[in-house]
Image 1 (cartoon, rainbow, N blue to C red):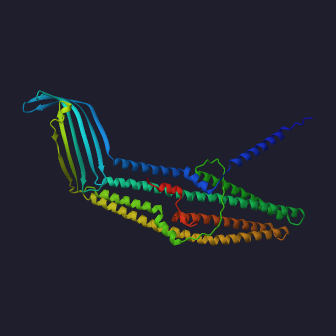
Image 2: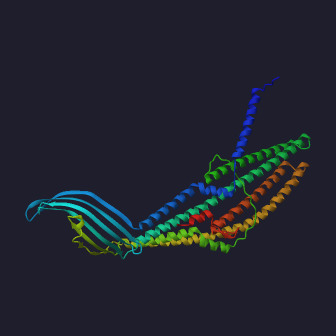
Image 3: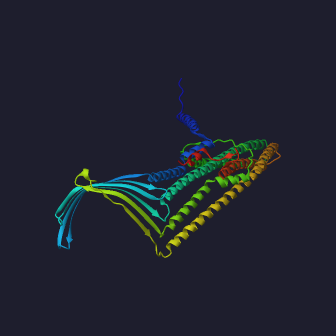
Length: 500
């Protein structure tokens, strides 16, 4: 005999099977991320890190271009055809004369900047063919010409622009590299905070689940007592209210955990549709911190101080450049060459002409209505401002490290107190749960002890997390890892501090 399954029952079976399959797929798709993995993902995918890395590479290419500009530059200019026909008036003969000129030429130049003196040495050779007719002399000339000369130009009484431009590009690259490294450190702090935030939410959810189970047990106890006539119905109403409140708290903690996960995934630059959990083992080991060493290392190694020093150097360069406004300066130009022309190409230098040349020019400002003086004073004030910023940053570093040190000492005490409070709260709850079973305690009183237990558990978890974050903050502020007693420069940061 064949038994048929009703459609509604069959539909329920399909729904249950689909739910089981979805649950299995969901659990397989879930990613368990450690703190180290989260940092690697963030360093690779974070938009802020990518932009900072691009800025560093851009400054590196600009420095490469500046270095390339210091090498010999070769150029070749070609005029394949030039034709002009003009008329000019001869006042002596009171006649108009026509001249016609056809020309083709090419110029080869080798130019070499001199970094040491900011001068420029150039070698130039110009070769051409010319066909010229002049009506005034009724003559025609067609032949070749060649000019070869060596020239040197040297600015006088002014700053070395070539060396300054090179130094500026080097400082810009160093500054961009430091900015990238600081971005890595800031990202490490943000990832740690987001990571421990999820861990905190997971702990809160776990504590809520334990509290919910405790409320379920207490509700079952009072239900059995009410049914047996050992307690009043008011006790059951209170137990149901406590149960509903615990259920609401549990749901709220689930929602907060999912929100924290979304923010964490966005920070890491991974898909928002991936389900992630974090895993870590917060082992509490008090770390001995040497305050003087932390401050000393922070004041000598902090990357932000190097950035401020770069800003100060750039301000000094601006002062040098500003001082050149309307200044007395000069230029020396030396040239020596040989010229030749002939109707036959092979005889171009049959009768060469030497052409030495020396030129000295000076630029003498007379009156500029105080423009140069005002600009120099503005640049000097900018230097003073940068020096104040640098000194203020040193004070900020010292103050922040001192604050972190005090917080760490306080957190050590808070952790010990929280541990003791949690143990006392667990013992108190167990004792009062037994009293509740025996009818010596009301639901309201048990709820108070349950809330106390949950609060003490969360206080301990928060103290441990805060201690870990403060240790990380101290590493970033002082660039010294006191947990392992070594300099704190991550491998990723070391690689990018190398300027090739």
